[in-house]
Length: 352
View (cartoon, rainbow, N blue to C red):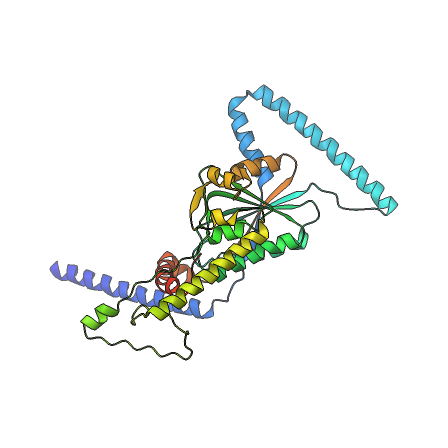
């Protein structure tokens, strides 16, 4: 009996090992041969979504007789509108004046920015798609959430939004939680900035920070060598001995970046008193409205519901399809990337 038990245990181990090897081979093959997939655009009709929510609630509030009468009335109205539309189209065809008439559209985008603003890859696809179909009277509502990050990354994100302005499309940025530093840099491109009462706004400043392990290395008799060509190829370093000259140069770069940041904001919001708000401080929405950092106090939900009354409201989202290997890497890989980015990029480049 003991022999059978040991044999069964051995057999189970062998089967487990074989299955693991087969799974590994399949994984390697799939990673090697899996074609790179492009992303795709997802479009959600927010009018229908809002109507479905209202209908679901009304079914609990009103009795069946009321709801039946309402549905009958709505069905009759839709039928009459369809007949009128068909008649108008026939007349237009006969006259050779057929044009496509529709309600003005509001395109809703979401941008939840990370430190390196990698989300700009999807934003540029979404904006390109909108520019291909938008006409006079259409608008874009961007629901923005970002505490800022790398200067060049948020500069590109702001430039993408500016494409809408250059095309004459009204842009509204709504901030429910936070649009600070690089996030506010994006927001200020808009024709109108709308903030929730306690959203964090501002932080118009530049920061860089990094640890220095030079003393620790010396204490343990560890040498660190860094070779550069060009006097200022590297200023502050994490492992070498930093000099006053390097610190002065790095501080100068921070000040120059801050001036560029203020100039960008002044270009898009010329009435803003920069001396009062470009101190690196942040304010809550209600305070920001008094300072002129935002134009209106409301939530993005208020804006969407209002737009649904007389506009066609479409949420646009570009989804990047990932390979199997990228999916398996998942959150752990992103966590490592974020940690390295915070340690390295913050020390080498200014952050907004």
